[in-house]
Image 1 (tube, helix red, strand yellow):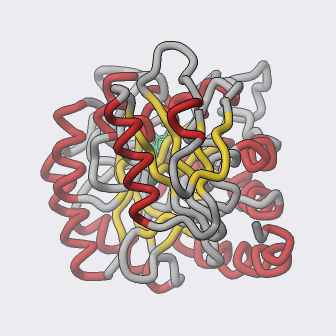
Image 2 (cartoon, protein in one colour):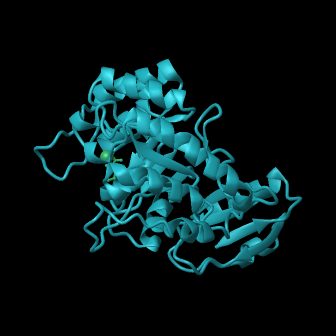
Image 3 (cartoon, rainbow, N blue to C red):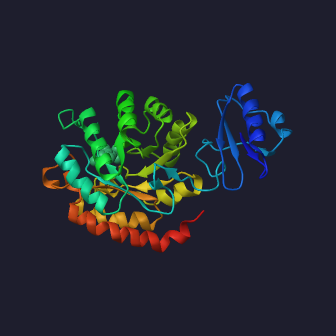
Length: 340
Ligand code: PEP
Ligand code: MN
């Protein structure tokens, strides 16, 4: 159930509704909006009785939710969510969010070389994995906490916000300590205990689409995070498994407008994992912005040929520098069409 408050409802009115929801043993989720506040209800095992809410001061209507998700939907929040990552760094706002950096943190020298170029490009976010979910147990697994410390140093030096992956609850504790955005990778999209942990994090969560996840499964994964009280979720389309052999994954750009129709959450596109091939990253990045993505995640390396992971899809610093003004120009052209 979803309670929509009147336009002139007071804070006291909202608190009153919150109190009744809590007394009934459910959990209220307050979503202030531009025009009105909505309150989502979770924790109910069956239908919620509308009666106690109908007569409460400030309530405009109580709506039964028929979709499988409650908190991710535009029914709860008609306007887009803008995620504030501190300072001027936002995802989902007017500015195209560019999150760039290597696949993995390999050394301080590597991170500083790439971060310098990312900063110079005007991007506000830096990526790099310290915990790497690798297909082979013998492949480079990441530097762990040491890697996070290097990322935190780069944040100090360049003023970039750090986006990095947590692969389990222990690494989530560390990511929360050192970084600004917690990435949940494709392989963990349905790791429900990790999703719940991310939902208790004090930092935003970037949730990648699973390797074979349908839209509903992906949105329900976001719902897991939000149901725990963390409403700052960014969805990331990074390609799915198909029969295609010309790419590592098939980047499903139709997912961007499809999500937009259902959800208020920002969506970013990852053309690096979405293609797996250096020469395809720039064209698919342009396309991702053209379909209305709120941002891009781009893998960049100062020496892609020596990268310890995902070198084949990493842009050189020079390629990256060419890409940024192009995608910003595309974003500027279509931005007026994306409002609302
Ligand atoms: C990554 O961002 O480096 C990564 C492992 O991504 P994904 O989970 O999309 O494979
Ligand atoms: Mn990678």
